[in-house]
Length: 453
Image (tube, rainbow, N blue to C red):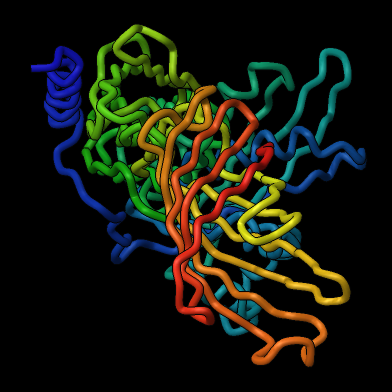
C-alpha cells in the first residue's frame, strides 16, 4: 500500500480519536438556546467629559464578550446594544417608578446591565466605574456597585471582579473560569466561529489562534462554518468544569485527482510525483493541506521532465490536476498551392496530439474565369507529431467549387471528395492523393505543397 495513504489514514484516525477526547458530542449545526433570559448589556457611558472612548470600549467589550456566550442568558447583538445606548442615562429613573412608564425597548429585556465611568485622578490615573443591573421581574435595580481602578493593565482585574459579582449576585451561579483554545489552519478560506449561537470571530488569515476565557460549569457548543458556502465544517458540544481547557481545531483540507497526461504520446508510460512522493495516474488523494502549496511533476520513461507545476487545493473541494505534455499547440496555419488551387490558406486545429481538423480555401483562374474552392478535412499522424521534425499522416477532404462569373460554366458549381497522404518535414508540407469529381464523375490525382506555421 502506498506509504502516503497509510499516513493519511492514520492521521485521520488520530484526529477522530482526539476529537472524541475533547468533545462529548459532534453535531452539524449549532443548537438554539432555549428558555434563556434576555440580558441587555449596554455600552458604559463616559461621564468624564473627555472625548476619548478607548476605556469605554475596553470595559464594554470585555463584559459583553464574556457574558454573551453564557448559555443561560440571551444577549442581543452588540449593534442592537449600541442602538440603545441612550437608555444608560435614563434607566435609573425608571427603576424607581412604575414599569408602565418604561420605554417599549425595556419590555423585551429580563435584565439590563448599564453603567458609567469617570476619571477622577490624573496622576496616577484612577477611574471610578459604576455598574447597575435592572430586573424586569422586580422592576428595580438588583445590582449597584462602584469600582475604583487604574487605567493600565490593573483594569482587567477590576473587570474580572465586576463579572464575578454580576454572575454570582444576579445570575446566582458560582464564578469559575475555563478556557477554549481555537486553532484553525485556514489557507485561503474564510471561516465564521460561533459559540452558543453567537458569532465570535471571522477567520481571514492563514493560521488563526485564539484563547477565550469562559464561565466554568457551563455547556458550550462551538462550531466553525466556511464562509464560502455556509457549511459547518466542525462542531462540538462540551460542558467545561472549572479551570478546564477545551482545544478546538480545524485544518482546511481538499482532495486531488491526478488526471492522465493531456496530449500524451502513443504507448508512453508516465511517472507522477506529488510533493516529492510517488503518485499514480487517476489517483484520488484526500486530506491535502489547503494552506500549503503543492507540486506535481511528471516524467516519461526516459526520465525526461514532461510537466511540472505548483497548485493549491480548496477546503472541501476536489481539484483535478491535468498534466499537459508539450506538443506544438492546438492551432496551426498553412499556405499551400495545389489541390486544384493556385493559392490557398488553411487552418488546422488539433483536439488531440495526433488528430486534426482543418478548414481552408483556395482560388485558381483561367483567363476571366475564377474558381473559389473552400474545403473541410480531417487527418491523423501515424508517425511523429507537431513536436517532431518528421511527420507522416493521412486524411480525407470534402471540397466545393464556385465558378465566377456564374454564367461562365453551367452549372456554376461543383463538388469533390478525396483522400490523401501527407509528408511533413519541419514547416514543409507535401500532400499526395486523389479526389473524385462529382461533376465529371471521375477520379483525378492531386498533389499540393505548403508551408505550415
